[in-house]
Amino acid sequence: MIVLDTNETILSPRNIRECKTKEQLILYLKLNLLGQALNKGKILQGYSLTITDEEEKDYTLNIRAINNDNVEEKIPISFSLENVIQYFSTKKEDKYELNYNINFENIIISCGLFIQNVNFNGSVYFRNTTLQLNVGFYNSNFNKLLVFSHSDFYKMQRLEFDNIEFNNMLSFAYCNFDCRVEIKNSKFNGISFFIRNTFHSILIFSKKCELNNIICFYISNFKSNLEFKNTTMNTIMYFRGSTISKLSFNEIKFNDNNSILSIDNNFIENNYYDRFFYYLLEDEKKEILKDINKKNNEINKIHFYNIRITGKIDLQNIEVKEADFKGSIIDGGLINPVNFKVHKFANRESALFLKNEAYARNNAIDALEYKAKEIDKHKEDLIKDWQKNKDFKTFGDILSIELSSLYSDNGQNWIRALFMTIAITVICFIVFYIPDLTQSNIIRLYYKNLFPELIKYFIPTDYTLLIKYAESNLHLLLKIFGVLVYFLGKVLFWYGSVQTVTAFRKFAKGA
Image (cartoon, helix red, strand yellow):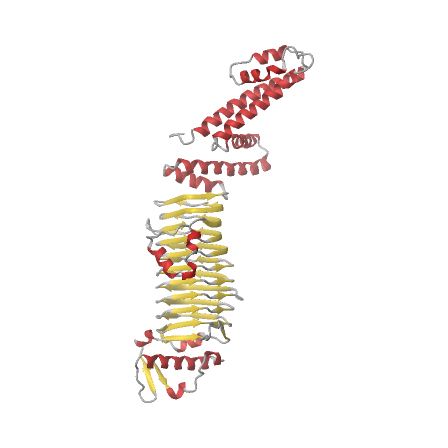
């Protein structure tokens, strides 16, 4: 409850530009509340009127600059606002209860903002506001809307939310963050939207955050890391049309099978949250959705560390440079990669993880692609091992993988395997055949017979050319070299044939 006395408010500044101290701002807000009360039909009792605790929810503390003539100007607030908020609050036990709505608009909060132990029972808006130095909210509840719109966070170390309950909608829209953003030990009980924001530094959810309602990231640019660490997902998380340098999930817990992480570029017309986002999007920005749906999410790195997946992870229409699933397991949930293109896996375990999941869903096509990536990572591990131990078994494994990669891209490309088989066999034959074209053997092995002899070389049981070769007058060492090349070509032909058949049958059942 507050009593507004006209004898006091007559001394108030008439414009927030004139407020140079917190006392002047309190007087200005009282005058503004008096104007709101009179507009609502309240009548002065003598020189004062009273706003009851129950009525406070219908009033707004307008810490805002009114710009005239379409001039966009922000007014600096160079003093602490914490005591102003406490003045209009009621102290109950260890917390302040603030029933008013608060509107911060067209201002520059230049000395930081430190809010703790406050229950915000009204909506809180930051519109076209610049926040400097450090901004933190601690041990507080937002029971109505918390909205940051067209606001800038810079010249500060961090924006921090610690031990916060968001019990209604949280929205960050069209904001620019030049600082680190940390959300710790907090509960998201209402829907949360992150729309068209730019994060130049890390955004991290950590220390047992609970995502108990929908959280949506729409068309945002994360130039640094977006991390979820030791966080519980009890509902659905959406990513749509965002650019992310590194998306990391570490020790995330899914509450049940209804918990869904959806990273999908496409906006869905019949999806309630996509439609709600479209409603929130400014009119001049809605045209961008036509272009957004034409391209994949742009994520540089995506990491899932040590996660027991009991819910569902949708990875759709995404292209990432590096993926890491090390330490993660499927426990009653599923991971559903659709049009999920990975240029590089961080380790063999990650490719193996997706391969096994694809086989579990009878998706042989994706499984074979992940298997090829797994083999590539295994080769890298073998090379590191060879550099340390010089073990010839390891060297043999490396050579085997290199040959498989050379011939058929690890069983993925039968056309390449066929071409390499023919090409390498022809090369071996020519190296074998050319030494016979000497002056002493020109009669026995004519150059004009090269092509017919090559055709016979492809016949597994035909060794007539080798018999002629043994009868020639070549030097013994040259003969030995020729015989070795001859049999090498035969072996590589058979190896290539197997590679070709294997790659050709990669989609066959049971292959």
